[in-house]
Image (cartoon, rainbow, N blue to C red; front, side):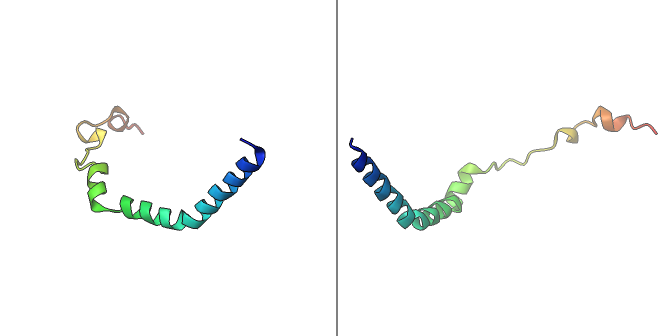
Length: 64
């Protein structure tokens, strides 16, 4: 491609990005906040901490 074509296409792409950026961000925020997507992304199982089952050695051997 010629240099003028590359520069022109870069200007057009940048202009389109500036023009449609707020709409794209709003669309992404709407999708990310939807309950349908959140159901698949979040882990519904409550995890127990590792020290919940046994007391770690560093806590068991507190010496003064």
